[in-house]
Length: 190
Image (cartoon, rainbow, N blue to C red; front, top):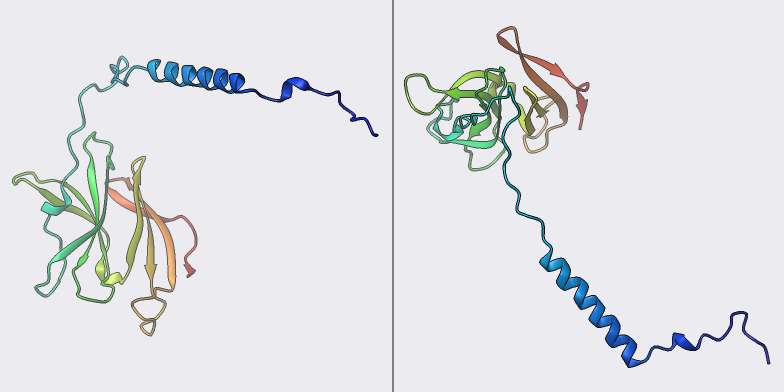
């Protein structure tokens, strides 16, 4: 007969009393965790010297009149993002807008909106992408005063409108009173 390399551990055979003790201990831990919850999060006061007033709401993209020629068809807002683009403390809205088509892929326009001066609602103050450029705008982000998007386009009129074959990642930043466009990567085929 061969002897095991480890000594016989008689206490490794759990009896029902051991299972009951383990279950009771686990129930106590779960109950204690349920009772010892952290306080709900609350807002704190702003640091000295920082702005304490809330920012006004960003312009509502649905209230703007867009410079699109849709031949009587309505416009559709595909994407929108908001942020302070010019550093004045008031957020602007950037909207990707196209004519609502029954089928196909209509080109997009990319517009910067601000609050209207004389009338309520939003007004277009800049056009970043003209629909005549035949681009579709995806991945729209406004962060740190910059607008970033991916532009999908076509290398020739022979490319079907369903399947753009060019892709370019670009950004715009308010500089010297105008939006300056920069390519984040070289234009490439999809």
